[in-house]
Length: 112
Length: 111
Image (tube, rainbow over all chains, first blue to last red; front, side, top):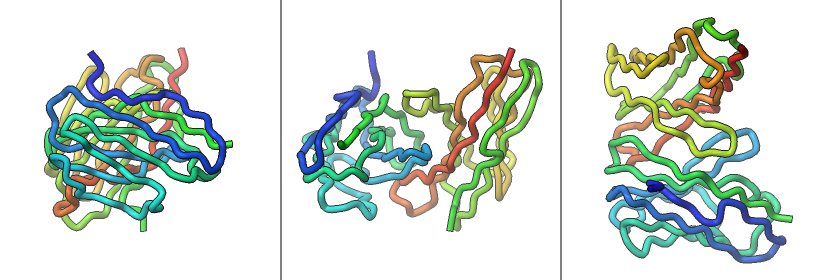
């Protein structure tokens, strides 16, 4: 059983399109995250939700909007995609805001 | 200003050649230091959490240690399957759970 799963694994799309990435965790965790890994492999936090409540919103363009319909799901919607949005996006979850995080396998987004 | 700095950026080892990776951090209050391993095309895999200076954790050929300013990941007698990028992350007090990651150390172990 996959603990943190993201779909799709690969996403190739044209500039200006709108796309969504879905994430689900079956660990019963309270906290979920979105991280972006750029071409230099640096992982940077974008958002965090705790019990469906947004608690971290880093300096991310308004085109990115997270949504948490319930504790087990955290989706990421991106409007008007730009070339610079190309990266690998990771979803993660942790039991709470103190414990370690477990990551999904990533979604490689390529904007052409 | 970088809060988490990892060194070296890359490390090439012969099988059996032990070495250490460094993670230095500058935070006002540490709420945990985390080590992860990342294989190409995969998500980071959790290895260890360290909470206070002097703490040590071990798993197979890996041992993580923590001081007030840095952490070391020691790889003893590495095997080719230990080849990966090792990431260090810190969590500050009052950070609402946010992890700050270092840039990673890419380790290649050759037979």
